[in-house]
Length: 83
Image 1: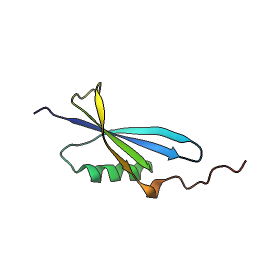
Image 2 (image 1 turned 180 degrees about the vertical axis):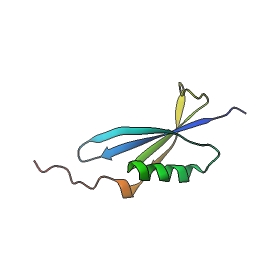
Image 3 (image 1 turned 90 degrees about the vertical axis):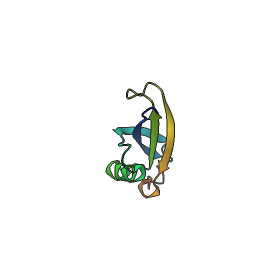
Image 4 (image 1 turned 60 degrees about the vertical axis):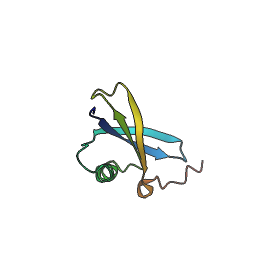
């Protein structure tokens, strides 16, 4: 069985201002619980969206979306600009 590699990418999202920016990438430890690692990363980056990608190579030349996590508590609270 081939080893799998996982990377988590945190995103800043503001629907009102049409912002969807990737912030940081983190290598995940496949021997630890993913949900716990993802929650910790969301808290550190205050990220409402984190996408986890899976690859069969450590260089991530070919990867697929493994899972997407959403955190309501970190969603942008703005109502958009009133201009």
